[in-house]
Image 1 (cartoon, rainbow, N blue to C red):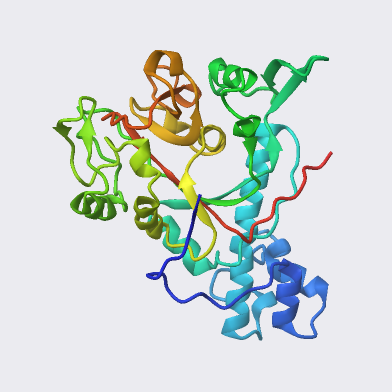
Image 2 (image 1 turned 180 degrees about the vertical axis):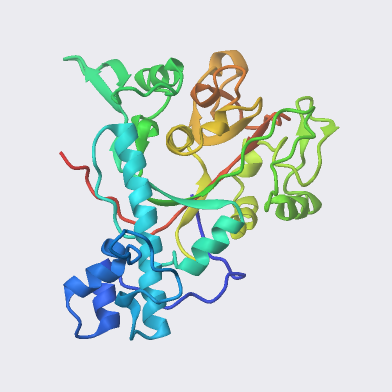
Length: 350
């Protein structure tokens, strides 16, 4: 993980309350909770006449009349926050088959910053804190079985991923989600085109070109000699991506002021793909993950291997494999994940 400190970011916005009703009540002064709930949109339907027809948009909603512009903006902001929380809650409920308590958005996620992130191709999503496997241990302490524990998880990682945990070549934490709000790069993976493929509208392109100029990355394909575009996410080795100097340049593009950033872990890629971005498994390129293991060490030599996956050819969201840390495959890109330090996961409802 790389701590995010972005000197290019805009000055932080005015802090806001993390409790919706408390925030509104603070803006309204002595108005009560019922009024605050109404202003949050729970009774915000457009007024209608006796026939059920809208009166029109000319008249300001009665609940907002008499409020200052600042108060109105605060109310509209809370509606945006609640819409995001509701979206995440519904998606988690549908996939996991149970409800989760979703905490307020991180303080940094103002309406202005949310709009900016969306324009740049980033989205806020919430991941609960939980393990996605059940482990069976025999009396001697040996792991005898590792199996997924989510019913209906059709696009789960390939069985070999869970076998690696059973064999002790991946830590069991590889199958756990770290709870909290995350900032996700929503760009689809491009299809393979002899290494010339690019992520659409890639905001990392300029940073990658600069890293190439400095010699911190040296993009090449497979044989280590075929040069790729210096603005491309492909042909970069896991060892280079793990260099703090490289990550320090890349994470500035996320433009968040606090928290951490890294490559996505295999499980984060899979769950976010299942929840929100199934198209990540639709194209013939893969992405490096943050996980390392001893997978295939006997075949490719001793030492750690870096996990990658996602290519549609072997299995899409389910595909997981690994290569050595110096591999420069022209069909393997990467995706960053930003995690906000303020976000705290809530335990799932029983």
